[in-house]
Length: 333
Image 1 (cartoon, rainbow, N blue to C red):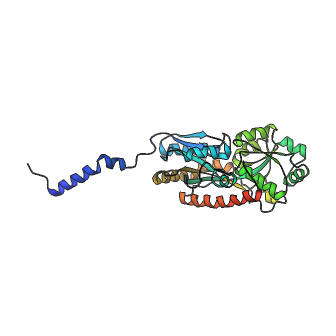
Image 2 (image 1 turned 135 degrees about the vertical axis):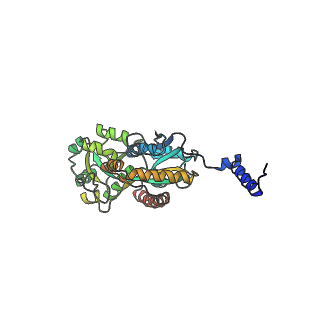
């Protein structure tokens, strides 16, 4: 019998070492092998929820696993975001973060349960959207409000008379209203809800008078005639509502701009490989004609930027909204 050469023995030893238990443990595990949770830190029916539910099936098809939406509202998004921050960094729990959870709240809340930079890995910006100033149609008619100028005149003549709903303290919906109050010298009573969905129900029902809602969640109600759109909060008009002016052009509020954004994040320590895969598939889904057109028809602007770009974006937005919070004087106990 011919004995193996020294070279063959070395190759065999190397192969055995590569297959050793320690080596196998070091290999990255397959992902995903079970359903993935996307936590939406607001109630169902709002834009955060709408975007997450539109994206989840596309990611499910790409990865061959179900992406489950879990709504965890409370404290302007902090409750759901905190849950994700404290979850295992294994790729099975993600957050649909917002301008509130990852830019505004750090300046607005005196004490945060998480660090929005250190406790998360940015994956990608999903979309940006303008907000829209909407009123209950019956209330607008009752108060004689047909445009932003009318609105400002009425609010100044009746301070505290108008009830302003929001999706929660610290959201861009809330801060849009606070910025508007500061820039116009008006005063409306603020009523925070646990998401746009329940706030819109009370607005349509007449309990609330107005709201600076995200365009995607307000759009169906505007089209159905259940809400009156006075103006959008972006610098330019929205292609989804071309006949609705911006606040800056509709009234004496030059320079007014307040938009929202939504993006995927994972707990700090999540594998860069997993983060990269989710980013790539999300970007691919957002450029697919069906989803892209669906989001744009609702007033959203799809993105899909890289993790590094999203991190820089969050840093810039944190600085911007910190200034807005300071100027507006908005506070949360």
